[in-house]
Image (cartoon, rainbow over all chains, first blue to last red; front, side, top):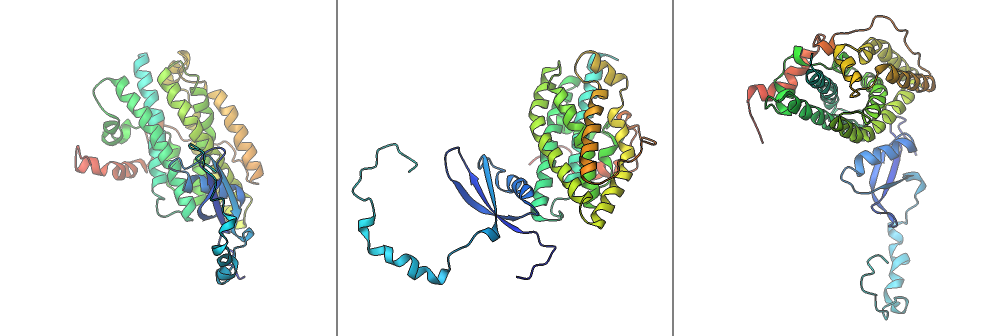
Length: 97
Length: 252
């Protein structure tokens, strides 16, 4: 992959809004190193109290599934309803499962 | 001078330092070297203007003449501003801007930390909030100094030039005139000699990691605290105050 050395690497940013919850993907940004990525994420993605924990991952570390394989990967699950836990009653008040 | 007059001067100094620096940093808005850093720098400018507002609001109350923070920010003349000459220096290139912030932050953080123990409750409260913001500012500006100094030949040269040019403006940060000494005697402000110890330690640590040379102490610029500013101040105020001067009382 040809890269202009003046382009900073891309990082994917995940923010956790409350302790105990999962880190959600909120976007990406450029930074020269992990420390700068954390600080840039703090400045770009937590301005409005979005969360209290930041994960930064170099975009190059992420492998994504191929869109063209979508049919092969995901369609077979459509008609296998026996895999879904549809016969349980959700206890009232359990918000995060 | 009375304690009230000294307190007023002291609050104006704290407010003006932050107001003028935040105005200078605001000039980079939309012109930053990278999108993320543009947002980061203007976020720091917003922190500073928040601190300026707190100090100028208190100054207006202490003065007791019915003025607001806006009157103080937008209707005073050059001779009435009492900021350090460091913050009125022009932005220059990005190394210059970062270096100016680094020198300011290295002094500002220990000062605000000390002010959290002020006998003046209002100032202690303002400082309590400011300390968190300024801790982050010093961390960011230190890291940028290290990236520039220990970076390429070009970045190192620009950082060293900035340091050499701005060093003369660090002297007035530690001046202790009658106003300041009165504030120290009643426990409102800390002795700046103790602040200098933290400042020197920070400077030495960061510059050594940045492979930059600490400039020798030579002539130190002075006069800012007495309202005697350099050639830049008039232009800074002309921009900053234009709207309120052209449309007095404008609101939106």
